Length: 443
Image (cartoon, rainbow, N blue to C red):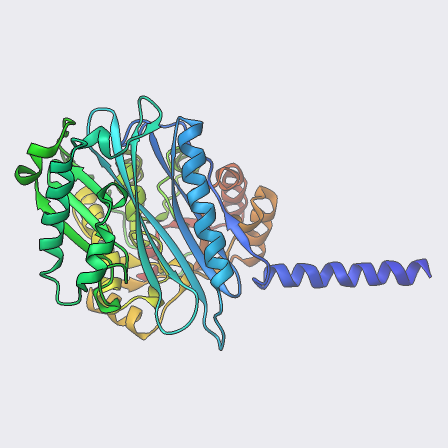
């Protein structure tokens, strides 16, 4: 009897493991906010993503040094996730997708504006896009309101309503009655004021037909200045004094024993440097599939990767499911990353890895038209799922083969912790570590 009970338990355990590995159970990769000064002092950006059988999810999570600010931002993102999962009704092989991208703007010496753009596909014919805006005083640890930036009087409110309405009515898809409702209280609108001027956003369907998507209004700074009470800072540019030249190496021996180690979703301000240390110890070159949003936030880390002789490759700007984007959306996600990489190393990325490995004919066509190569993998470390250095080592060593492409993520401390052991084992087995582009020259 005890033997039978034990057998049943082992079977159930095996089934549960299969169910998890098959993607039926949600798996999440989550990065704690690092203590690192990037492009925006006092502001940090980390990456979270989740992949199940029914949906994919990617979120750029902003963090600060203030618990009160973080609590509000975390609650906002939590509610977005829960709302997405409640509305999820995909079927017939469809897969839902939630993408929340964060763009940051410095608006004064101590304040930032965060623009969070959400795209949610929960089923049906189309997804829906929304925009949310947060104004932060990073020094005081508080959110800024309308009256902290604009004169809080009737003249300013009237000017705002009139000027924005005039701009909106130039859009053929806009409905007048919706505009009137959306502008009834200017203080609740989604706006941003920078040295370039005033930008106001309206969600899809908020003021116009769905064909218009998210509607954006832009007003020059000189028109706004009479109504502003706060000093606006100039936006800093990404000034790279000189590009980093990756040292060349002799061609690979067609009979050599090679492996390409690849890292997705970085650069990360604390994990990526540790990965670089491990690679340097074994004279290993690797390929880093970077997110443009992370390069923008941590340019010095991205430059360190290039300076160490590694390959920088394209993993999109905001980690969307490219298979759910139109052609121009796919193009935009790739183009911005290529521009960032070109600024760093003097040339555009040769390789593109779609998030989640999601692709279709349109994705493949855009990548080919751009003269780039679609780059997937042959060995998955699943480091984003188990977060266990020993398990990562086992999966890589068990799956490795000559000319293997290994998938890892340089955003998890456990990956950096387990990497030296992986490198040591593969070196003992006679592998030489090369970039993915190098590997493709002999295939």
